[in-house]
Image (cartoon, rainbow, N blue to C red):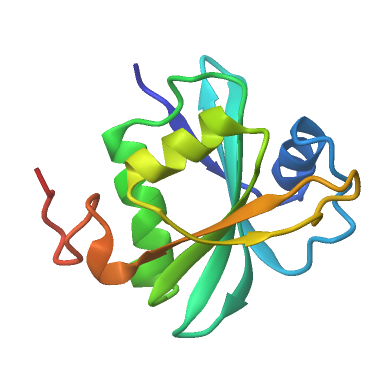
Length: 147
């Protein structure tokens, strides 16, 4: 399957991601967002936000197609964080009830780092996960593929 990676020039993709997560987009400040399309249909989006130069960036991910995530897409998304933004780490939050997403991001290489109790508006807990640059199994940062 070939997916097209689309930069979010107008903010439409970041709003699509937020709607898919049942969130408003008012919390979102400056960001870099990419959409993933298959056959001209948006199937996923990744928002890079709350960036601290040379330190870290937060990811917010949404998908409506379980096949959106392939090796090429992963290499490119991790390269944005670790090469283009020159971050040492990527952070993300996963609601406790979203066991599918928690399993998915842990398989990508993210590690659980903590729990925010009663964090969501509905009182749900959220796991904090992170990945350090040197832990990333998807890119070796010299332009070569990790196998």
